Amino acid sequence: MDRDISNLTPRASAFGPEYSEVMNFGTDRSSVGISHVSYWVPPEIVDNREVAKRHGFGEDFVLEKLGIRERRVLASQLTLAEMASNAMLELLRETSTAASDVELLILVSQTGDFALPHSSAVVQKISGVSESALIFDISLGCSGYVIGLDTAIALMDRLGLGTGVLLTADVYSRIVDPGDRGTAPSLHLNDVTSCG
Image (tube, rainbow, N blue to C red; front, side, top):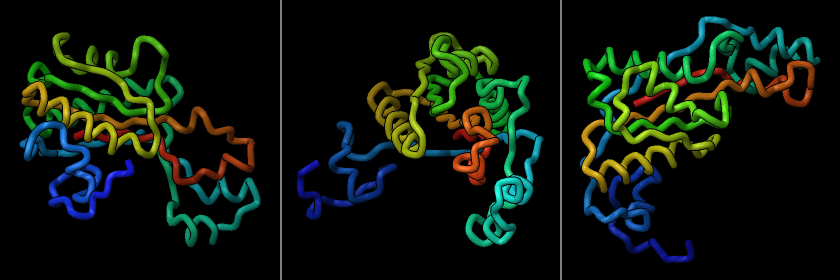
């Protein structure tokens, strides 16, 4: 974007107030907001100090540089969609929301289970979200939450949807080679999911 935005009036946006005028989707102010956040983490724990030691990194590297002592790993018999469904069901339970009330479901992941069906369709089936709901995946990594959030806001505003869920989920343990010293000590990558 080459447009000068320094003189714009700040508004709320997932990108921050300085970008909201540029990213305006046709409304002066969105009524869409995050009312609740839930998450689910697998029970299996991997001690990062042990992984670092196997690859010649000291314990001080893990504790001082990363500050992450342990991470979670999804059991091999479970899928990303099942993990995401656990967070989705937790969100529905915690907010006393009926699955049939969900009108939008976006799942952001770069480690989806299959090309087809997309993981959000599996989450839809497991969690009982209506077949009339708008559902899709966004395949992104770090920027995925922000892009997913702005996409949800735009769609909910434009289509007048009442209840939407944004899920993020990744299973990095399945794409990182545990024997590769260059990637295995990616000790900050958990298998985890969150939604709101």
